[in-house]
Length: 106
Image 1 (tube, rainbow, N blue to C red):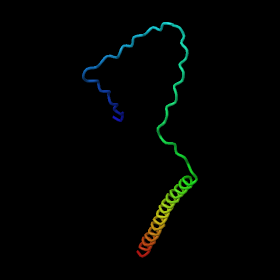
Image 2: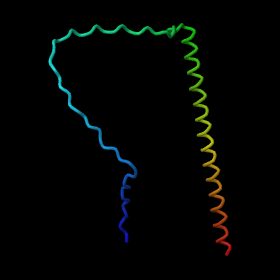
Image 3: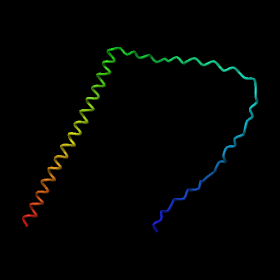
Image 4: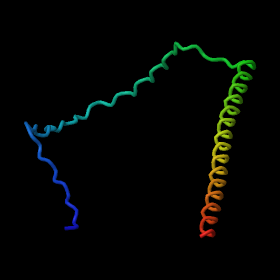
């Protein structure tokens, strides 16, 4: 009753193709050939990027701005969570005191 029922593998339907037959080939020893010369490196059509001091300064400034924005967003989210937790804690204390005072009056 409590034993799990394992599913059975479905049988294939339709036409089943037999596995491909691989025929061995023979290697005949021949005269050794000299290794081919290495192919020349392909010429790139993309222009090379040259970093000037101005572009490097712009990249550093952009990176700094991104880090500051991401940091500000994360800090604001952390602050929102802290404020929410504090308000929930205050509500819990108020509810606890209301429930405790209701029990004392009876």
